[in-house]
Image 1: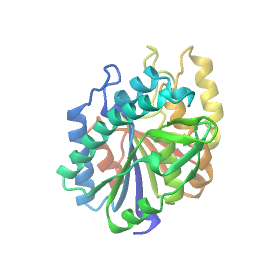
Image 2 (image 1 turned 135 degrees about the vertical axis):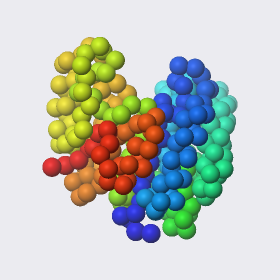
Image 3 (image 1 turned 120 degrees about the horizontal axis):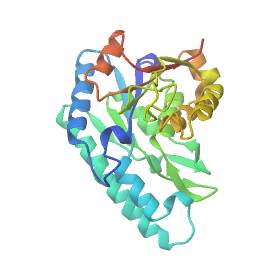
Length: 273
């Protein structure tokens, strides 16, 4: 295994779960996603893989219900946090089992055991075990979690941030965000306007791009993409050095496979040129 072989693949919470209904998994989507990933592995298109998953409708409702996103206030919250982790662990186990059913040597890992943050930003991590299992040929599976936070006691750590940090630590070749939409649009695709998919976005133009979107729409014109795009700023230097970043939909069959084959597909590449 070399760093050029490593793909960090983030499976979005909106892709895998129905965010409009608490604790609802899109079972057909998970089946299709795991099948395509196995096909890519069998074809040699993926040699070394880390999967990061969002928690979607399994994590957001209890976090908001118990106000865990506001950080540690008193010890009465601790049972609530434990309950939230148990709910999310059911999702993790289901995802891991589906990959295992496909014959993929998955290794379920918890971010809360490996990262520390400060005001919701990862500041320290211990990924030696993850790197070790990856070198053996296992596929680490790690998802959004609550992390110990030196400024807030604990805080939410989303999968996007975890994926970005891992891409740097592992010096990955690919960082890919699988979502329920084809990529980033120049306008809010739900606004009724003629929104166009942005096929390439220069990381150095990101601030101006988001500013233009905000000016053209009362809503967050990039939808859920704003946080995803901003999470890439800390790895600008990695992108300049050649880290390939793409945002795409896995609702469309074989998009991942075609992309890794070098075929033309509908998605957004984040690059430096």
